[in-house]
Length: 135
Image (cartoon, rainbow, N blue to C red):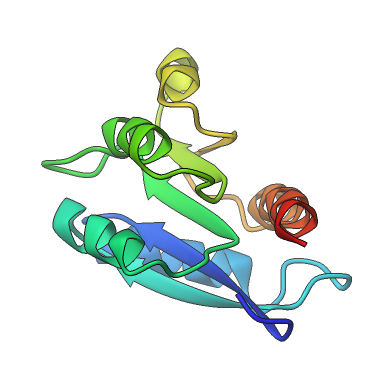
């Protein structure tokens, strides 16, 4: 993360979901925040590899419906294995999945279909908190 960009990592096995997230977020989620730079991964291996590389993300967005490795389990794994990880927003299909998102320790939940009005607001709040935390 630099002063000029906030890095956002999007995990989904579905490229259309990744594209929808990218389009919903746009280039800047709020006027008081830096522009965002979106990085996409489609597999658990790619996700863990990028985290192992030590890239400082301002936000991670995981698809709860991803197959074969779902976003819920990966969010839980990331929170357990990576100290001081970026906040995670989980994309969920059903309201009933909120308890699973809580178990995964995700900081936010966003419903499918992706809402281009509310997702950037949620993302901005999480990015602000992360930037304040890391200074």
